[in-house]
Length: 185
Length: 185
Image (tube, rainbow over all chains, first blue to last red; front, side, top):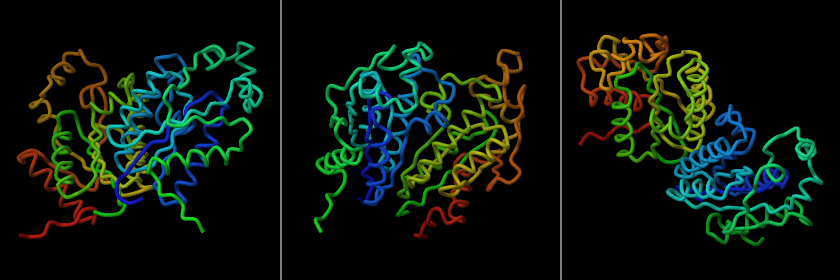
């Protein structure tokens, strides 16, 4: 993990799919293996990059392109970037990918939790509020989610612990040569 | 220039003071000496980070804090970041400095070109338009510029070429131990 071989792991999926949880576990494991890791997820991004943006398509696109651009700069600088963002639009994810691929590898991780399962989890009560009409433009309820067609990895979280899902991501990063495989003790 | 000793060179000053010109020369010299350089100046920032923001104090502050936050992430990743931004408010520059200093050195460069000289240069005709009332909230004309009190270096550009000004910045970076001094041939 020397030199400047930056990459970006981009977790996309519905609200409550498990993106941030899996992303944090992947980030911790990357750090343990010596990477300089930068996590760009919802709260950080809404505070430091995208305050004032809403959930219309133009605002969502702007948010995603902004994250993609920052991820590309950090990838160029050699960081391992972990992004967790609903990022519902295929074309916009493609643009974020193009930014990053100028400087390193882009690994799209589709956290493919079904909407039924996301609604069952609903940790913040957002689906309930969206169904009640209290939140407009809610992805999966009143706003589209375009699932990836060519994600580097698709993770079915149902019946898996977050740790097991994170291990699948790490295995893919090893397979892509982005992190060294762990020596067997 | 090994390891991850990132830093940020932050050029502040009036419009047409010479910030971007000096910044580009410093960036080129840093690259020549082996640094991974990232330039954050007006056009890049307005396109990728701050599209939609205007020139009110809250919008200017948001723009500067956003640049400061991105600079801090890149500094953390070990980059040499060169920011050129009017950044007229002392408190906001201080906040940007605080972000960066969590991870590396912040070098404030006050490009101290007088407003008379900036108006004389006026490469984009902006001062003329501001004086004619066609641009509101124009720094130095209808909006304040709070000059730095504790900049690491203050550069008087009048009577100096941009190359000479850039050399002063490089000398300061050497003095601070951020770049190795050039061997004398």
